[in-house]
Image (tube, rainbow, N blue to C red):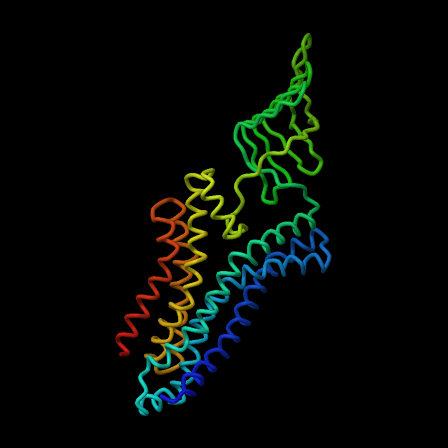
Length: 349
């Protein structure tokens, strides 16, 4: 086989890969902008702040794009070669179809290495920066985590809430079953609000009780200072580097669902770096079997849809609830497409 032939095919595929990267990044970034621009305008964010937030989130989008662009590029590039009868000409020259696929393993192995580095280094730092930027935009303090049966006992006082329910941004939290005791005064209320920025509790229509007086309800509400800071729950594993993920798992402080999510996240970073190779084999073999662009487009849609269902929805949920071992769940999509690729390659052979 002439040495220039696989290089020619590789060039066609890599050109389409660049197009796929640009296309999927633009589509995802457009979706993020449309979902967040309203919040940014409402909070009077500056263009610099909004741009910083988008830039910080781009590694998360890149993590998906690097993988999904693989079948896009291979299927469309090979469909173009099929349409122009170049694949037929190559076969007529006595070149085995699979000899066009094996050289693709090298560039997409490099893509896999980039996926691993991005997921373990750039994406965690970017997500931290994304949240920090939005906290700056909203002028928020440290977020308040949710907690049951909260108790805080500073000198000369007692704060209790049966439930602390954080809001979406973490700036405030709803309080349920509240009691505040300060000196001889006791305040009780069914509900209230914890403001992390002003460091206060706002009690809704509380009852006030002091020795020697009848209990009295204060309908306008009462605001009292509250300087406690709750211990944050374990961070989102997507925001943690590989080394810190291993340290958290080895530390023995995680259990149940949280531990399974951490195990799945770490295993998925290794599995996702292997996915471009599995995709290259499966999409390459599939592209050589298709004879026109319509079939290639249909194959691409099925390819990506099946992978998304497994990668983003089914396997993470099964790992989270403990129905499937987290490591096995993380590797299932890649191994499945590897088996599909091996089966199609055997048919081509």
